[in-house]
Image: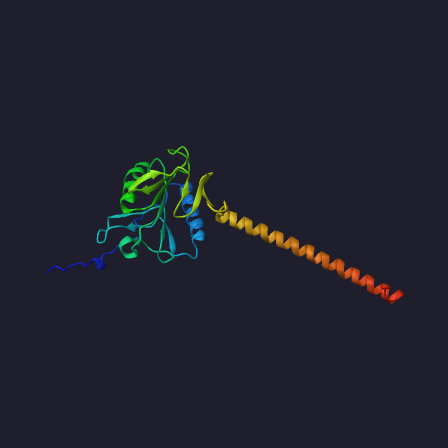
Length: 230
């Protein structure tokens, strides 16, 4: 007797055993983008996932893709083993692919078409080595269900300006121009702040020492000559 397998019994794998990225440069770009956007969206109803399967057709385990970085709004914050669109009821608003000549065709054809059909508002291709995208960064925005090139490198869903700096994407707040620091820059800024606080603490101690010495001198004067005249 044949048993019917319900859609809830289907297992959706979270890994295929393939490497996360082609090179260290690509991996570093993925992880840095992930961390910067996670910090930026902290406290909001949003999540940022990296290199995790996104399933887009319930019951069909082969209907999946693993964006390098995807940003989803109006969902519970935090990580997932994988992302199922029909469960979360939200499509990613922004997707980043760290591209190379080896993934060029898939990124430009299959993924671009798929994301367009799914309704992903923005699709960004970043070529950290500049191997096939001369300017390294190319963005597409959905307009009338078709992707159009983003001319100003600004992300509307994220409200951020994107710039290429070396082998990374840098993000700047559109309103203030403030840069979102990467982990290394945050650590350096924290160290600088600690150094400044230590310097101020040292200066304060020196001022206290000077004040103590002046009070001591004043007390000696009083003992020798009496109170100062008014």
